[in-house]
Image 1: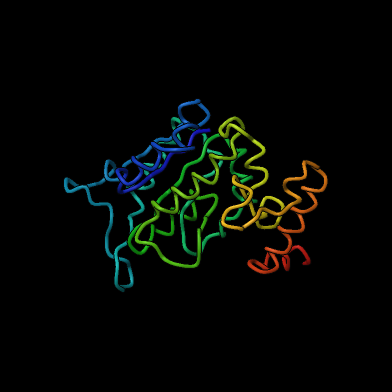
Image 2 (image 1 turned 120 degrees about the horizontal axis):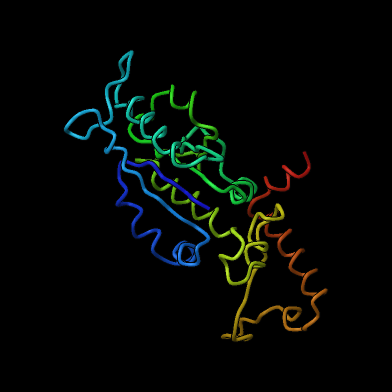
Length: 228
């Protein structure tokens, strides 16, 4: 998979993509990440790509021309399955959406900034708009990083144990069950006996019931969605 990211601050990603699963995905050749500095497409010598909004109001807007030029230049090199814009009013990122995007080959992510991007870019280029929560960030870089991480770990071969991704929270519409490790008894705090019994069916049944109970307590809205 190739993920290209258009950003005003490419340096914000450098450390993020050099550690843990994302680095492993790139080292193994399962993921390629390209950071494109939108300022390289500035129409002036100052490197600015923003201007005041028509109609007035506070805040600046990323201009249509440099962003359109950038996207079209990249499209000459790559055929994108999705052009994603990180927007507060976009579709909420969830596990199902990450699963869908992980099956694509080429993604382009636009990082918003200031008061946003010129609406004409959203109308003529963007194929999907994604939000990571009902709050506003200073820029779309953090959202783009979250989206990339949620996708990359699902690419077959990235995780040493692919079953790990399949058992993550939300994959089956529930939060994950409680997990324990050694020692089985710490300060009298004991691991549930069923997890030590060695019977896969009993363990699986306990994990499902535990996940269901935790979902009822912590994220009941997930169960409400299933009932709709």
